[in-house]
Amino acid sequence: MRILVISDVHANLVALEAVLAAAEGEWERVWFLGDLVGYGPNPNECVERLRALDPLALSGNHDWAVLGKLDTEDFNSEARHAVYWTRRVLSEENRLYLESLAPRRVEERFTLAHASPRHPVWEYILDLPTALDNFGYFDTPYCLVGHSHVPLLFVLDEAANELNYFAVGHGDAVSLDQHRFILNPGGVGQPRDGDPRAAYALLDDETLQWEFRRVAYDVAETQRRMRELKMPRRLIERLEHGL
Ligand code: ZN
Image 1 (cartoon, helix red, strand yellow):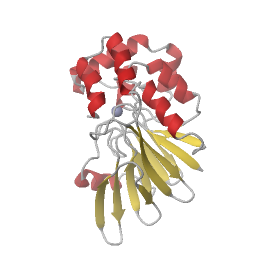
Image 2 (cartoon, protein in one colour):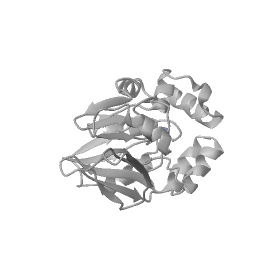
Image 3 (spheres, protein in one colour):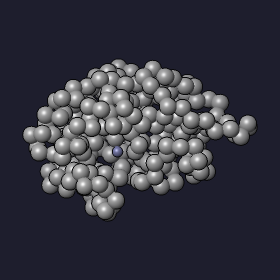
Image 4 (cartoon, protein in one colour):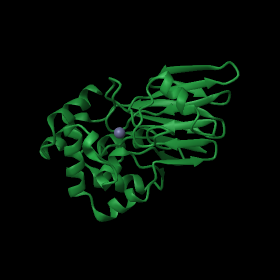
């Protein structure tokens, strides 16, 4: 089966639509790794658009904060503002949908976790020591994570006792058959690797091919919607820098 793997939409409908248009016809199932809301201007529209795709979906730390399941004390002031605003506008039906999602699940050979398999709602896997620890917290060969909004892969060659890390860009592909992997498709709605384009990945769980993709979206349109809602300026500006 061909799977569209996306994460961290963060209420950015324009970016989500761009990804769905770019990947049209290339997948049968969507796997979503969490943080559907928070930061962006279209939380209800994003929940409804994703839900209509009948995805296998996780919740993330921002979803949890909006649901009141996570203290916002660790959030910076802009993120906290987004959480409170989202709480006010989110419909009850969409809130219940987010409530129904877990931050971690296992799907055959893949463990899916929003942040990390060890701490599914708050740990960032961005370096080798953290990745190495986390390989001890899932039993499947592969783990898919989001949360950092940075597309990357960690590959563990158990026979050679060697762990490697790769930052990846559009079109980079990898065959998953030899080793164990932790993979992050990057963020759809708020990329943070210096590339403002929305990030996603395509996975074939039979041939075990994984491909990283980027697609430009109308950042200015998302920013216009955020300005109209008087959202924090830093959240608006970071989108054009991809940081
Ligand atoms: Zn996120």
